[in-house]
Length: 216
Image 1 (spheres, rainbow, N blue to C red):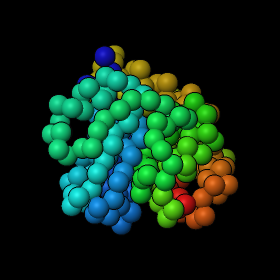
Image 2 (image 1 turned 60 degrees about the horizontal axis):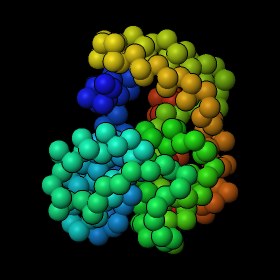
Image 3 (image 1 turned 135 degrees about the vertical axis):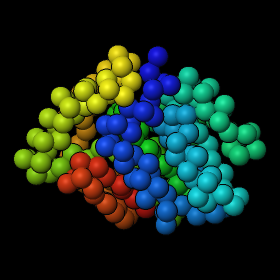
Image 4 (image 1 turned 135 degrees about the horizontal axis):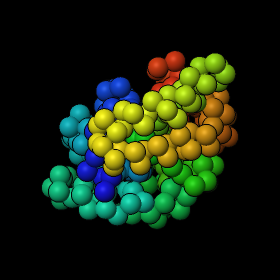
């Protein structure tokens, strides 16, 4: 089962920087008293950081397509720390319009079935002035750098994942297929600009890692 190994592998393939990127995304982008949807929450890495960094009267809803992830999350959080936990896909969010200050995606939006629809749904459930926060793999616009990232995900990732989690880690090789479908950084920016009034990209690892804020 891959879930218990998820953190180990994610840390290995991000060269130990996954949590640094999550923290950077949260700081100065999420504030006390806000209502937050952790979309693709897994078992709560982003949620845990929000509750640790922001705390005061912050409400978080954890939302993930995989029920086992959410079941595991309940072992780490007391009920009074979360508003609630629910399962579903990004393209059809079971929430009313204009209810969240933040929709955050920590290494999850890339797994959407229909990216444009997922972005439209995030926009729908955000309050005016709300924002989405994306932490994910970047797909550099520069062809040479993009080829390097592609090589890393296709070949090096498997070695690191196996070293971190044995045979279970090899399931992460599917990330390469996800990366192939993922838009380039400029294409993602253009897609977000179709809906959101302001989009800001922070890039690391030569554009192979991104932190994106898009404001409604």
